Length: 274
Figure (cartoon, rainbow, N blue to C red):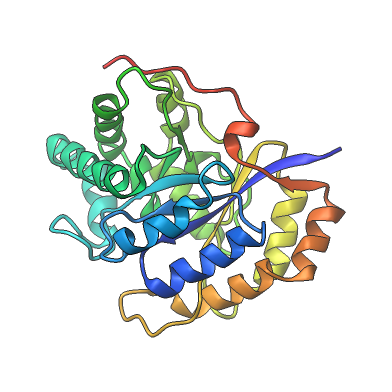
């Protein structure tokens, strides 16, 4: 039996090197989605290249609050603590989300197919509600984007503590999103330590074996580059090389995995009332 899987490369436009690697994997059919950091200075220059894959892969917004683009950027620890204490400004977060949605649309020519979050910030308390409000403002009368649900994490990767923290801070996101009329990804994988020593190939084998039909796996490929603002730069080339390899193609065949856009695997979301 074939299992449909959406394999999504995060962080498009974070840098030229990351974008180039993702574009190569899209062209090779080794990805079926990518999410864009629309605040990035190089987004405008790479949007046209990504447009060549419109309709062939899902293109979404990678909502960002922690990477140093823009005035609202703070370390992830800030958002984790403040969200749990409910000490965040919902209007400020809504405006930040609207701005990033608008930057995506300005250069890509349409709204995103889906929305996820850099370091999963979109699923945090308060942040999630602000994001729902921003989507309601911009998607009036249109089919809603689908959302990544980190609390549906189905495999801990090589770091059970990291997985436990993610599930804890994003608890209730999937239920809340569906209550607001969104379609969410029913199974999520790709979480791991993101260290150069990690066995990415071995982990990918486990994720492909475990994913159900219509699952989603995130990845972080790219070409190597010296980027002081990218804490996982050393792992990106390792992911890129494996995803482009025959070994990855063989694993997909072994587990009956077909890479597809998520809207080919799920019902179309219904519009959310403004």
